[in-house]
Image (cartoon, rainbow, N blue to C red):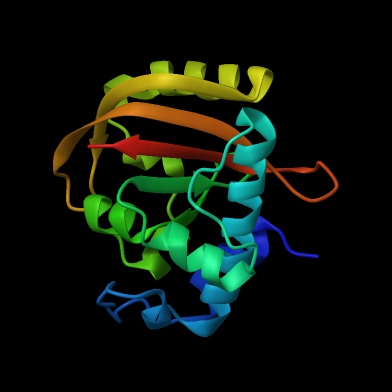
Length: 178
């Protein structure tokens, strides 16, 4: 079984050189261990979305790798965090990686709270708690901060809880347009 811990902190802290930068043109440029984690994460995200909303987030083939590549290449931002007490980011598609300016290996060791302005933390926490309680939150809009401090607005955001195959909580994800 896998968890956000396996797909984030173990890779980020112990196995990878942080100085290496990736050109995020294709998912094949992500290190193999992380790619495997993100393939599983993508499928959990897509299945959770369908379970909550009764529709697909992207057109699916139900082949894990192909669906993961489809989500990675989507023309909207998708970014998720785990269930840690200070949740770490554990997935981002190409759009989100470029928008936030994250190298995938830095992303997986970054607390998700750092993607929002300090003055927006209370509102962010309120929305994440409501999402946890209700299962989702729609039509959020807010200012976010890139890895280099650039501010940008996300809008028409849907946030939802991600569950594993047995219903165990895996974290939360947001889908945003910029």
